[in-house]
Amino acid sequence: MEAREKLLGAALGLMIIAWALISGIGQYTDLLAELDEEAQEADIKVIDYLDLLEDFQEDSTDYELLLNKSLGSDINVALNDYKAWLVELLEGDLEISNYDIKNEPPRDVDNIYTSLGIRLNATGSLQQTTKLLYLFETKQLLHRIKDLTVTPTGYNQYQLVLAIEAIAMTEAPSKTDVTAVAHSETLNGESYEDYWTRISNRNFFGPENKEPTFTPPPIAATVGEKTSRTLTASAGVNEQNVQNVVFELDEDSIPPNFVATLAGNSLTVSSEDVGTYRFNVKVTDNGLPAKTITRELAVTVNEKQVPKPAELKPEPPKPPEFNVAQLAFFTSTVEVNGRVQVWIHRRDLGEILKLPLGSKIEIGAIRGTIHDVDQRYLTILTENKDLLEIKAGKALSTAENITSQAESLLP
Image 1: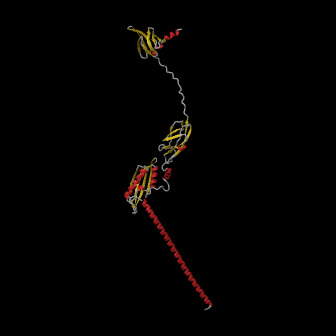
Image 2: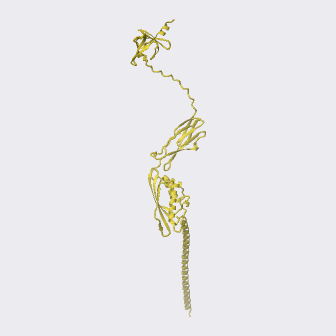
Image 3: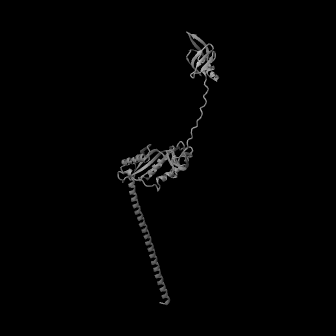
């Protein structure tokens, strides 16, 4: 064999070996790829299995939790217990007396649970409605509100209609003490007060509540004595007929050496020291939400006033009295049965008096006794021993005091 043929043979052998190597390497690479793919599929199956196992465990846990929240599997007992809890909730916690509870026929679902339909119709305030919903949602039972209708019937009065669904699971114990089932401490992390604040501030059915108005009256008091004053305030505009206001003292603002008490809207103050005392009074309405204002009230305590002596006022002059003697006339002298009579005509009475000597006479300013008489004169002796003389035909009021005239002539 020539050298050239030997080289060709060697080259051909190397090519065969190389082909064999390349072919073997390709098959090995394909095998590794198949093995890697199978390993990945196995990993996925393991993960899926673990996920299924975890889901099963979670579902088992959730199922146990649902069983713990379920009503009893004895449907009649469960329905009565649930309605009894609603009554206790309405009458006890909410103080709602106007309500009606009706139930629908139970509905079995795939022999897994029974759905109990209940319809609640009640009347209450917004506060009661809010608390009802809060207590319902925090009650750890398998129940829900499917439908809720709230209709205003008056100021802060609403008609509530609730469609409720409660669940009784088939594998639950036959009876559950519904009343003993606890409430969650919060609802989505919020307390009842949080919900009440947000709901009342939304004011679904009316205009915004206005602040009450209160103008503090100035009060004057006397040192060492109690003084009382009735405080008056009004709710906001157009709210006087539907709202009330409550007064409250800000105890921290009351100054020392000063006493202030409040009973309803009656304020009583006192101090043993003279001065001006200022403190705060709060006024709160019962609107939705309630509004409170604070106003400063001032009390001036003064010294006791020394009473002034009473001024003596002169008595007013008496009105002049009419002298009836002006209408009584000495008309004549008549002798009857040896006795002399004085006739006096009283025009005021329309009669004639017939008086003998010594008779008492009281006519107007003329008072005394008949002392003497003749055809010309009548003489009357007064209680003061004065002699009054009246001419015939003249009124008694023309009488002259002859005693005084005589005394005036004496030296």
